[in-house]
Length: 417
Ligand code: DI6
Ligand code: FE
Image 1 (cartoon, rainbow, N blue to C red):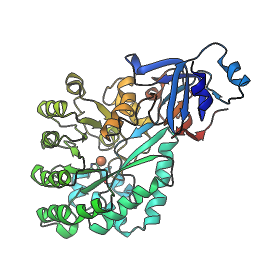
Image 2 (cartoon, rainbow, N blue to C red; image 1 turned 60 degrees about the horizontal axis):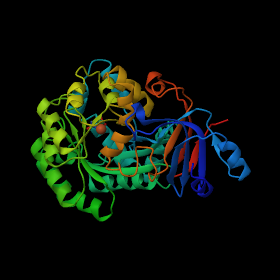
Image 3 (cartoon, rainbow, N blue to C red; image 1 turned 60 degrees about the vertical axis):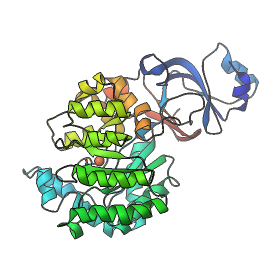
């Protein structure tokens, strides 16, 4: 045990069971461990030694005794649309009288009704409503959140959304990654000329987003109710020009072969994938792209076709899970519920679901060097769980055993008694 490291530590947790995702054991388990942090990073992970508490007491070094509780990397929600105006409860009601999600979108509802509400909302209104939703994620051990624009669909509102998303990092203890999703839907102004909208995005909106450093990635919705592969390719070319990595909403409702296109741009992730073909999976296997699965949208839209988990396993594509928190297809603020749905709806294993919200979710955001595992040198983001085994996290639903959250080495949620 390196007592010198412990003497310099800012925080020490003893008698912890760790899910590190950083060794060959299931969950990267390190049982009965000490974890310490210094200057916001993990400075030590070692097995407990006999008499350590006493040694620390004698040296007057304070620590938290976790008494066998489990500690995981801070969870990462790598796909959300959590900044938006209004809600779509009325459309939920419509869908239950038999009108489909696609039909509602064609009638000018759906994404466009949220566009109206988001354009009308002030920055402070958007911030306040997003914070309420984010607080629910944080209470479940989430320490990193990706947030997309895409409910503005004009220069002013896309910028407003991204500014609000960026500024959230100063108000909440989470890392925020922002994604420009101008190509989410065709706005009413361009209803007859979607190609002109794509040119507007590439020539006028994206340059402003880049100039003000408002986005960490660029995304698009490749779908028959969204944009064609050819239109998406123009957005990708502009993103590449601006040196921004790409992501894609791909094959959610039909196979548009957007996955292959995204792979050819070495996308960070392709998201949804219910209708992806084996060729699509083979393509992302060689491009190192993460498959982000979104069971809340699948569940909420009453989809029947599940993403091809078997192929993803066979081709060794890393799988991530996220809430897709949005007002239309996934008004969901529980990443723990996604673990459960990953198992029950998609038949993922409990370990796959936990890797999907830690190490693989970090990869989907290009953050794997900093986040997603417990290892010396990584950022000290972690969650503490009152459980006896990791599989308890996906096992129960509607239940939150998170008793502590540490962000950059600082306790930000503490229910430990
Ligand atoms: N796919 C989704 O699941 C969200 N966007 C997208 O392209 C849904 C957005 C919405 O319905 O508001
Ligand atoms: Fe989405």
